[in-house]
Length: 331
Image (cartoon, rainbow, N blue to C red):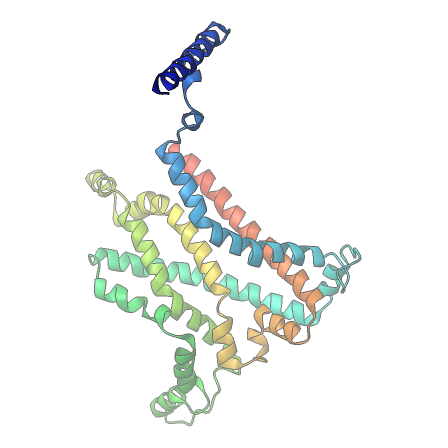
């Protein structure tokens, strides 16, 4: 029995060798044909494996963004061109109806005025503070204090603001003691309401933007300032020809983040003045709240689409301007 098994194994080995020699005689044969099926799989590089791992880790977040942001926004864009039921195409009828809405025109005008006033003031004030801190060598304690308003809860800080700004509040008592006359002015529900809202926005976001400007200032090479001093350039010339061109990229970042933060001021406006504030601070966020309470989905979708388009246009202008500035610097 043992001899027969050995003879059988020998015959199997000779048949395998014959098949191998026959395969060598076929055209296009190479030694790689002897590699097993498991070894024929392509070997991924380390970068490819890291990319696959990164995509795998990002998959839950990307899925959430797609389900809860992208797909709903596509539906919002579709409904802005449809009727109230979202079934029939209505063209630009929704946009004409929105343009005839007096409340929308008032809220849009106040929002645009608010952005045009707040953003330049915030950029200029935060840049001035960043330059002062930079000249002082850092002032880390001041930096921590400056960003404190951004970390505090909005509800608690609005309560403090109301104590100061309400009728016969702390501010009225201070002014009364200084002028020796009674002050009973409601600073939140009067002609000063817009200034109060602008001050609240500046107070909350100036420190954060100052840190962004400081990061840009620290990235400017010191050799450029030394060469300018040797050439006899003054402080204003160094700021104009060195600091400003080197801060163009930081300026775009600060502008975009400040624009995004300005749309989050609704919490302060709502907590300060309620759902129906003074006409000077009746913003788009108040209007959206009223539309949401009335379940006016058609107007909400149309206005949201317009705001998204305007935001995309502003972002594209910033990116396009940055590319133009970068091209001029490289030239």
